[in-house]
Length: 141
Image 1: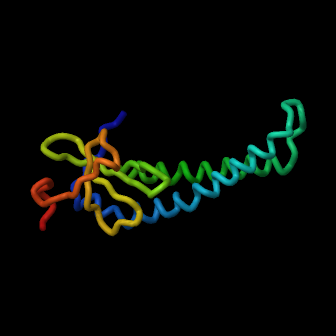
Image 2: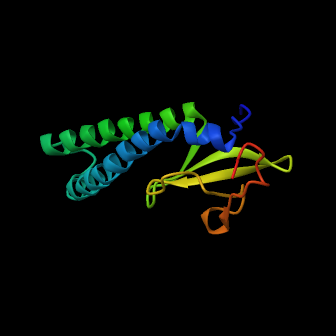
Image 3: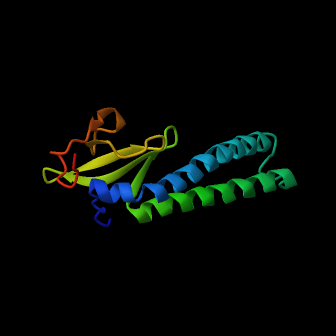
């Protein structure tokens, strides 16, 4: 596994216009995928393994695959930026950063204008703490 990209607060915030767009696309595609999967599951119920696949089932399966590939593309785009997508519920994105020479996450969610919080790598969203100027030398009050 490659070493993660380490961001300063400023560097992470500079990516937000792109990240916000990708996360919006991701959040729009995910419910479509879930609906298609649910439809596929209903359609497969009465079909036996030796049956010929009905057209509607095949079309739905192909649609599930297309949307899943689109979602995967968005995830790869975020990975290419260097951030980590953490959740479809709130559009959570983390950016690796250093605090006192240890790896932490700068934490952002879709409805936030800026990156204002961080948390320990193993703490998750519930462990979010406000960023202050003393924590990250590139953050100027």
